Image (cartoon, rainbow, N blue to C red):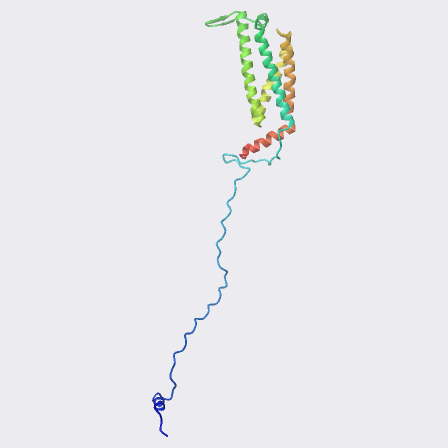
Length: 227
């Protein structure tokens, strides 16, 4: 039996089957990483403004006060002071209306003449000068007190202290005026006593605990930029 052409070809190749190209092998799978994916971190929260910080770098060192409304003691105290100042203005107007009578009474107080180099004033001229100066100074003081009442109404403690000082000076001079013979105008003298009583009421009301708490709270509000 003769061998065919195919058998002869196989014999020439050494009896081995033909080598076919092997299919492409997929790359080995990479093992999953043990670390979780890195997510972007949220932005860090910036610290807010300190509610206890003063404007200018200093801080409120005391305890934060409780919120309080303007108490009745502040309203009534400042109202009493306004009443006293009003009586003072009425007294000044009365003295201006009866200026001649007041001047005559002042001249009768046996004041020595004023003798200075280049200026010589007798008793009548000196009395007129002192009376006019007293009226002008009184009007200026009342205007300043009204300004301080406005600041005290808004909660400025320094204005309250200033009103105490003015009231203290008036109360200190009240016994001196009472030691005289009643003054030139009895009506003005009576107004002075009512004015003194209103000053005492106003000072006492502004020193009570509710008033102190409210002024402290208003100071804290301004210190923290809230009022």
